[in-house]
Length: 631
Image (cartoon, rainbow, N blue to C red):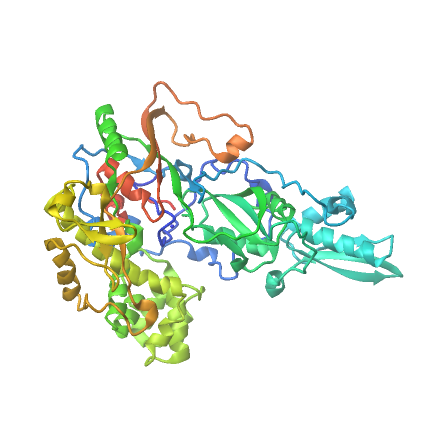
């Protein structure tokens, strides 16, 4: 819930796929060559990958009136603010830099069969049966025509076109040419023209709404699964951005793609994607013009993918410029492997600005809609894009949603959606106006509040009882929570113990920490016995979450290096292209800790790294350690 930086902040941590990532301010781009093999030369000539609402370039930088990013982030949250207080191990912490390069953080999805998803094949599936005899699309066009069409597709001049004379003037032949152009060169449209008695197929760039129109239906073999599954390898791009790019080039709606989880931007990530009735050939062709994306490992299946059905993620993480002794590193990593880490919700769950998302969630649960509106729209200190600052200032001055909306070049952000709702429904109908925000974003706020309560109560429970099961703790038996007796507690370990997220369908520990839930919600003017909201979407059923997570497949090594620009992870792309793995030095100016581990869904790699380093992972704390922050 992603960017090669020659400098970064000390112990800076990532946003994992489970998070609602907040984009960090972009100061400048000094990426190293970590996008190996992703057709950058061609990609630079591709059709613009941005959406219609892409930000103007001049708005990318944070406008801080001379303040440094570190100064602005003094208003941000710390771990203490969101209940993250305790550690498992008693080893002494040490310093390191996470994501000095985005290639220092690599995530491979683990699918529902337990297999780690990798990009290692760029071939298309062999069909067991040809649907009909026809001339292969690649043979319909001459090499010269394909060269011209490829140049047309990659050049940004969308007013150009390529004319293909159809010497054999039959409907069948014209259909073959139309189909070949559209399937081999996504993003191009065709039409038939007659000039001086001759027929031509004219190829040109699709534009505007037409680019998103559903493609014409072609025959689909009955023996072929309806969904093309493929592996998406991406660098420095979050999952939804990647899906939007693919949608634009294939002239599809984004909702025809399915996936098991969203992955962060500031990383190299590998995951499985499925799309309805699009051939592997069409998708494979995109590799010629995509930037920071690579597609492969194609197969046809009868089913799409579903959110949450993954087994987890495998992480390869490099912490550079570490200062820990061999003994400290050994103690830290052994503890992570054998005992694990506290399963806190990471900092990215709560936002990075002076207004935490859990405060908005609390106001929703309180039915305090004026407070919800104010928290989202009011001016706030800290790092924000200039247009958001101007929008908030206008709102504070005029309370006029239309005037504030005019300050936003991008209307799809949360603030823009709420202002559109207020313009449409009026200031007296904030509930309906708030409903203009996409459902997942609205639910994010109340889930953030649940996470805040869970973090706080787990810290209290660890403070009270340490890392052993005790009478009154909860464990799951067949999916149902069970309260441990003193005798049962002797037979269980801390790895069995769960704590509830507050809701109407959970029970609470019977020891005094259970009472802490009631005290905390009462202090927030909420009734723990009535977590059903008058708006069904905001009713909280609750859930159970393990206190400790023990990673699987844990390994580590200390690496010597001299140059921060040299990659220390062998990526799927480099392996696919036969490039050699990094050669580690026997001696070097700096040391790095390279670690690998696998985590189940809904757990935060940042919290595992926090346990190793023994450091606050908040941006506020990290920017005070190192005032250079590059996105």
